[in-house]
Length: 475
Image 1 (cartoon, helix red, strand yellow):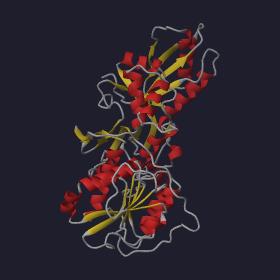
Image 2 (cartoon, helix red, strand yellow):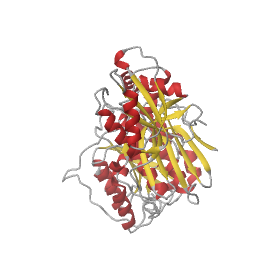
Image 3 (cartoon, helix red, strand yellow):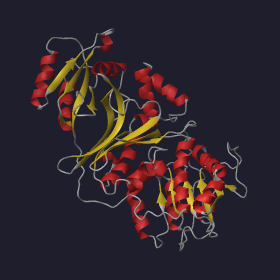
Image 4 (spheres, one colour):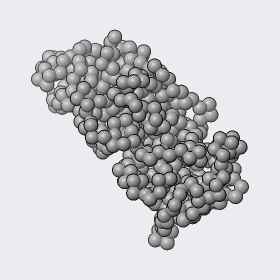
């Protein structure tokens, strides 16, 4: 087993810089082709234009200033921040603006500046950010971005644009887009090229992992855990993308393209967040000898097809992912050659995310090139919107005779074999619930079982289900 660690000592609260000055007919950039993205400036200088002067943008500036001499020795070039584009130029910054750097409010101030070699996009969003990224690439500037939502949404367009550029020097880098400070993108582009990945499973959203840790270890309710995550800056004002699993799904889509060479629409990937989880579920998980994690999982089956999902999952206490707590991220990769590789580190925050952006910037300064930023496409595998797993089911009920018999009959009807039935002591009638663990079965069969159970008069509310991560979870 290989453990790739990316722990960062100083982690500040996360934050997202919103869009800045909108592109109007007056300010929309004019695109100019360029012979070389990294040779427009003096040969010994690389100039940057940063879109976003908030949490991550400030971290990038701080690291560049602190390690200026080291980077110069490492790359043979001076890395200079020439312009930073923000919404409000009068707003105080929590970092020192470098000498010679201008604070601007128009995107065009960077996009139309031929002396800027690299556009760094850390503003977030998928509208103005798309104009910025595409505009920079069209004008011959290399791009470094932390925007997983934009990449997941427009990956094919980005790929087509890159393929059509005249200059092969223009690069697209996005290490910070998936799991913040963990170098998973670079690893997928280099460490597994001679390998074949069978399974990826990961804790790829820090907010939800923090909340689930609080619910399990600290016995907090969902609302209490969310409130604490918000107070610490792990959750946005609208936490839907995090708690709904959508942020994790965007990251999983990008990883699937790198691992399997396939473009999958996000909506095709089954996605369930943590909003349905209760203390009851953690109680049963503890009884079984494990805990619950929100995971993104993609797996190649024996036929070579690939399935994927984002969902709460039961993991045993001896599983390497079970001990990854707080806002930490982790990704496990099972492959033919390397067998098992686990990457653990900070998935968000000022310095972890900025650090990954810095790594991309330094790589560009060194002249590293990646002709295919998303790895080659492949037609060997197809995506199937179904998967097999052992499942945990939790059913809330109104007490009456014959409940277990009816559940057994419905499971038999749909070919679902029951491994065990659990019922913890009930303290309150409104918490009346029991749990079922199935044998390995198709997800589609579980959906049919739950639909039939929900229609029964004793079933209170929507039944809850989650996959069990390992088929050998009892061994």
